[in-house]
Length: 214
Image (cartoon, rainbow, N blue to C red; front, side, top):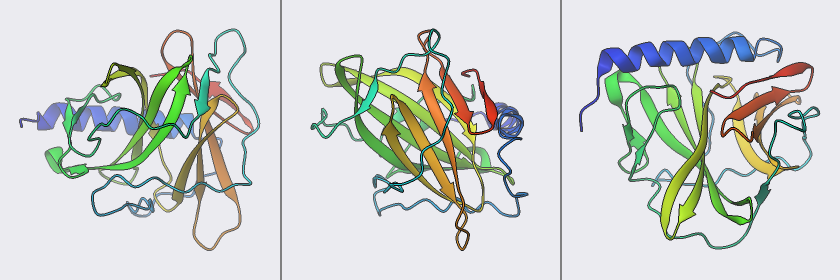
């Protein structure tokens, strides 16, 4: 397993900078540490339990967005998500997970969420990796379809996360939704990720315009 440290460092910096710009209207706290707050099992593949009552307003524009993503309880083809290679939507080198984690070039990457879904009438999986390096953690959101039992990457996006919040993910209204809540605070910040017809993922949140896919 070979990682190019300099290239990854540059890609991380770019992804973090883009994420910060994208989320400037969300009222996030100033980053003070790199705690991600995600619930994770020993093997790194736990599903994150979502909050049932928070739902963001605003969505992707109708003609540009594909709302074919829906939640599903069906059994997906068996894939060892905790031990496989992922592409990096931040344009860094490939990420090779072992037991749900990797540490390339000083960064810490962990598998935090796997959601069963359907997309355009076929089985799909939403997989989220969390990368921490420096003050701003980044969620790597990836949508997979299947060719037989083989996962096929359909869309991906790098998205900055709140370093002090607990994150939860769910699928609703044709989009993936991330809900973040700072422990001890009642407010929940919700971000919507909608897959566009061009294969990118659009990111939006209440009170802010949508940002194009990476």
